[in-house]
Structures are given as C-alpha cells and as structure tokens.
Length: 286
Ligand SMILES: CC/C=C\C/C=C\C/C=C\C/C=C/C(=O)SCCNC(=O)CCNC(=O)[C@H](O)C(C)(C)COP(=O)(O)OP(=O)(O)OC[C@H]1O[C@@H](n2cnc3c(N)ncnc32)[C@H](O)[C@@H]1OP(=O)(O)O
Image (cartoon, rainbow, N blue to C red; front, top):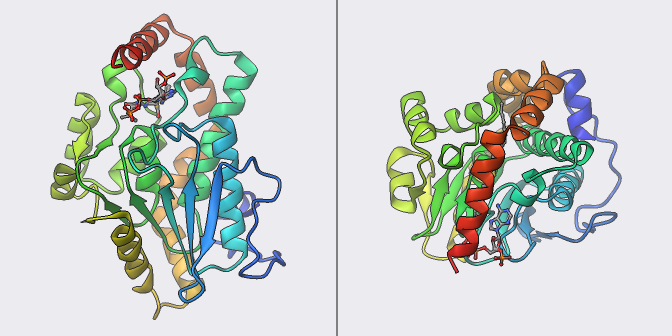
C-alpha cells in the first residue's frame, strides 16, 4: 500500500491511513513465514524471516515480508531490523526451484513480487537495518543492501554470485549493490561472482559492522536507528527517498520491460543449463 502510493509520486509523504496501535502487530492474512517483535522501550520492530531450512525467497515468504514491512510502517515503529530465525542462513536468495522449467504465469508473478519486495525495502519510510546472522548470497545480499545499515556475524558469506551459474542481474539489483559499494568493486565482484567473507565484506564496506552474536547485532542495528533521533521523521523520510530516487526510478520507469527481459532470459537454455548444474551441485554437497 505504501509502495503503491509512492509509485504515483516518490516525493510525497505516505498518507498514513493505518489505524492499528503500535503494539498490536499481527501477521494478519499472511502465511506466518515472518514474525514481528516490537521492543517496548525503543519502539523498534525486528522482522524475522522464518522459512526453514534456508529462508529461500518463495512467493509466500516475499508476500509475507512485504506485508510485514507495510504493517511495521503503518504502526509507526521507530525503525525496522531485518533478520533471520535461522542461526546459519540470513537468506539463501530466490527460490531456485521457481526458476527451473517454470510455469510462465507463475514466473511472472514471482518476478513481480521480487520487484515489489525490493521497492518495499528500498522505500521504507522508517530507518532500516539488517542483522545478517548467517549466509546472505544473491537476493539475500540484495535485501541487505536495500537496508540502510548492515551488521554481520563472523564466518558467513555475502555477495551476488550470479555469474557462477550463468545468471544475470537486473540493473536495479546492480544499483542496489552499487549504492553500498564503489562501482569498480561492484563491477569486479559481479563479474567474478564473488561471495565476500564477513571480514572481506567489512573491509570493502559491504557491511558496516561485525557483531559477536545475534543479540549484539540487533543492539548495534538499534544503536544505528537511534542515530536518527534528532532528525524530523518526515524530513528524514523525504530525504531518504530523494537519495534513493534515481535507483528506484530505474525500476519504476519500465517494470514491465524488466519483467519481460528476465522471463526471456530465464527461459534460455544457457540459464536453464546453468541452473540445473547449480541445483545438482547443491544436492551433491551432501
Ligand atoms: C536482465 C536480467 C535477466 C535475468 C535475471 C534472471 C534471473 C535472476 C538472476 C539473478 C538474481 C538471482 C537471485 C537469486 O537469489 S538466485 C538464488 C541464489 N542462491 C544460491 O545460489 C544459494 C544456494 N544455497 C547455498 O549456497 C546454501 O544452501 C547456503 C550457503 C545458503 C546454506 O547452506 P546449508 O549447508 O546450510 O544448506 P543446504 O544443505 O545447502 O540447503 C538446504 C536445502 O535448501 C536447498 N536450497 C538452498 N538454497 C536454495 C535456493 N536458493 N533455492 C532453492 N533451494 C535451495 C538445498 O538444495 C537443500 O535442499 P535439500 O537437499 O532438499 O535439503
């Protein structure tokens, strides 16, 4: 709902029509793949992905994430921290099974909701941070880069390794990466299909801090959100949207074109063969 109002005018303040009270967050009509906990003292909402085994972005998980982001914004939380209930994986990225020999209509729905999720995170009016408490490959990394701050636990990997299995990324995904990292590093990392270790991610600036535990990561994210206490919330939201305007416009100006290009590419033998080999590799790992 927020996203739709923004598509009309990115500079407009979201009309707050939501009537729920701050502490009454429920997961309403969604599938229960996310949970929201609001800290009574700070008013900060922690949004956890909870789809075992590895939080793959299925249609349902993406739907629940968007629904939860909207709820958190509507309930005027002070900030949003995105994290995972799994202690090894933040998110394994898009559900690869949705991309393998796909039903064409479902694939369109899948890609459209992925665009929606990116927009919801990118345009979220309140401060956002990611507590990356596990591996964050591919779209897991893209979700983290759509947040304003990233804190990660040691000994995990993060990055967009799409070229390793003949995937391409859309320009808006690259821009998200590029909003956090210098262009030359993004170009090299995307071309290499690089997954950064936590330490490497800190050194290049893909993450902002390392934390010793999930509890610490959440506290560090909350401290970041607290840095906006002196800013007027409306001025802050408008400024955030202005800063992100060109990246968001890149997707909004031709969403249908992006969808067509992705669907076409996903249906190519090059993509399907690369994906098949990748899925085999995941099975053989065991
Ligand atoms: C113009 C543009 C054109 C075209 C665009 C076209 C396409 C889109 C291109 C780019 C964007 C892509 C975005 C993506 O996000 S694609 C997803 C990429 N993600 C991965 O490759 C991650 C793969 N997973 C892993 O590396 C590991 O699972 C992980 C390190 C996350 C965790 O390891 P762990 O040892 O803890 O678990 P596993 O035993 O490996 O996995 C458990 C279970 O889950 C299955 N699995 C894992 N990841 C996925 C996934 N992404 N999708 C579906 N299923 C997944 C895995 O096979 C295991 O299943 P099972 O054997 O049945 O237990």
